[in-house]
Amino acid sequence: DVSTLDPQNTGEVVRRGARASLGSQLLVQMGSAGATVILARILTPHEFGIVALAQSIIGVVSLVGLTGITAAIVTSKGDVSAKASTYFWMAVLASAVAGALLWFAAPTLVRSLGQTDVTPYVRVLLLSPVASLLTLVPLALLQRHLRFGRMNLVVVLGAAVYFAVEIALALAGLGAWAVVVGQVAGGVVSLVVALVAARWLPLARPRVAEVRQDVNLLGNLGLSTILGYVWKNSDYWVV
Image (cartoon, rainbow, N blue to C red; front, top):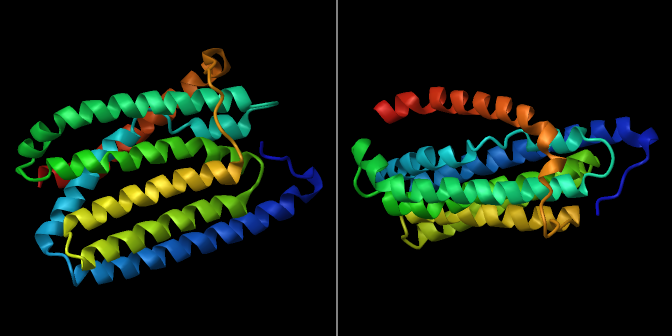
């Protein structure tokens, strides 16, 4: 279990954590920019288009109404072991259902957007948002106990694997698959590192009663996320 820090040190830890988080985000952005420059010299515009469309479609899986998990866990009073485990299994169920629906809907979706060869990419890339949803819980536990260094480690290692794998596979001639496999690999690594960093595994049995009071929070945040995502991507889907 994640240990609790001395309250007297909380302010300083938060300030250091904020600075470290900013540094890690800048590092990830620099790595992303560098990887994009390298990939631009390897992949064709058509391959970039495949990746962009696939990523846009699979983003729907992240809109399953669980965006309030972090806030619910961080702000809860007392022991959150049962609540965290319940949210983890809720994320497993929600991502499985959303992923299955999108798996079968993918051919129709890509045809409606004027594409015929993107379905396999969408189906494989589904693993990435699933891993991201499951990573929410251990990351929330780390944030609850102010383990910002470990949170940043999760972000940086996941991104590093993503960039390294996609560049290596692109150089090997895998085209758009290089980015897809790299993104999935980065997501899986982030999940594993987050679980190890939090020193946490979910309880075998979820307890719905533990999260019933958070339903309104999850619903409101989920609706806001859905509307924002549709607004952001509607122009691309139309084009």
